[in-house]
Amino acid sequence: MRMTKPMADGSKILDSEKYLDCHKMGRQLINYRSHGFYLKKRKRESDDKSLSDNHHEVGDDVFMLDQKMSDFVQLVEDCSKEIDRASNFTQNIVKRLNPKAGTFDKMVAFRLLQHCETSHEGMKKVFAEMGEEFRMFSVSEDGSTMLRPNAKRWKINLHVDGLSARNFRKLPFNLT
Image 1 (cartoon, rainbow, N blue to C red):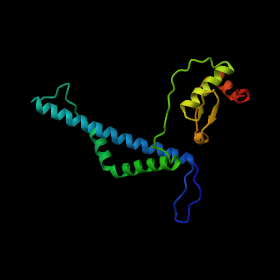
Image 2: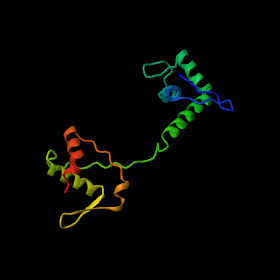
Image 3: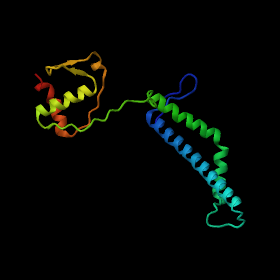
Image 4: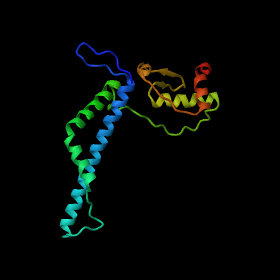
């Protein structure tokens, strides 16, 4: 793991490997805190159940924290400020590396098209139906197509098998 030279204010710039390592460590701390919350919740629910059932003896349904678990829960509580900082650090890394994280994208799932996409004519029909669904072009009554003004702003990720991908790449050469 390599760090660059310190900046004028004394802070250091981290390379991508160091960012990833810090992100993993931060996620581990957050997971530890979640596990501590789980242990406390389970203990509290067990105590509430035993009080409501008027059980004074330890049974199979009573959850007990041993010394190691109690120490772990206490350590997590004592480090809550540091874990909060780790949580903020991981959120900031994600926002910095992917500014659009957390924003909604639009996904369109098409119905199955009943055209033989192994032929060029079938691929043309599949492309025409997809274009209409995405509102990239309109089809007139005589069968001709016209590209809509917003069509060039769309980015479409097409997931198909190898043969369909080959036919789709060759489609522009076969359009008339």
